[in-house]
Length: 214
Image 1 (cartoon, rainbow, N blue to C red):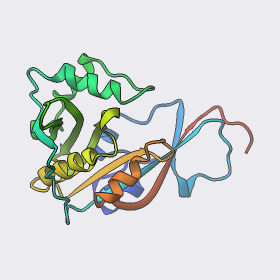
Image 2: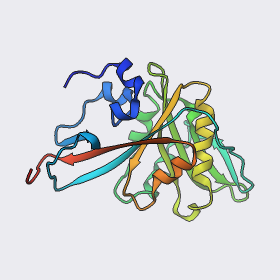
Image 3: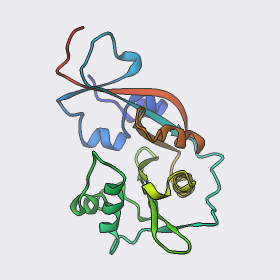
C-alpha cells in the first residue's frame, strides 16, 4: 500500500485513515491486526473484530462550557500527572496507563499544555473527569485523545463540558478536529461526540489476522 500523502488525507481525513495523520507517519499499523474501512472489508470472516467510529468537527457551533456545579481548569503538568493516570485507570477495566506513559505524552511534538483539562466539583474540588487533546501543526488537525468521566459523575454533562472546552481551545489553532472510539462500548461514546457537533459515518474495523473462513 502506498504511503498516504498529507494532501490526500486532508481531503477526507476520517475516510482516508483510522487514526490522526501524526500517528500514521510516526508508527505504522501493527502486523498482528488488519485495519480497514468498513466499505473495503470484503467477505472474509475474522474471529475477533472491533468496530471504531471516526468523526470530524469543523469548529463551528461549539457548545457553551459553563456549568453551575462543575469547574474546568488546566492540569498542572508538574504535579498532577499521577492524578491523570489515576483518573484514566479508574475509567477502564481493560486499559491501564502508568506515570511513565503519561509523562511521555507531554514530550511529544503534538502536546500542548493548554489542551489538558480537569473537571472538578465546584464545592468539594474533587476530580470529576479529564479531557486531553493534541494538536498536529503540520496537518492543522486537533484530535481528542482522552475524554474520561469518573463513574460517580457520569450522566451529569461533564463529558460535554470537557469536549466543548477542548474544541474552544483548538478553534484558535486547528482547521478541524477528529475523534474515534469503539462503537460497541457500553458507554456509547459516539453519542456524546455527536451531541457536541461531530459528524460523519466512517467506520473502521480492527481485525485479528488469524481469520477463519472467507
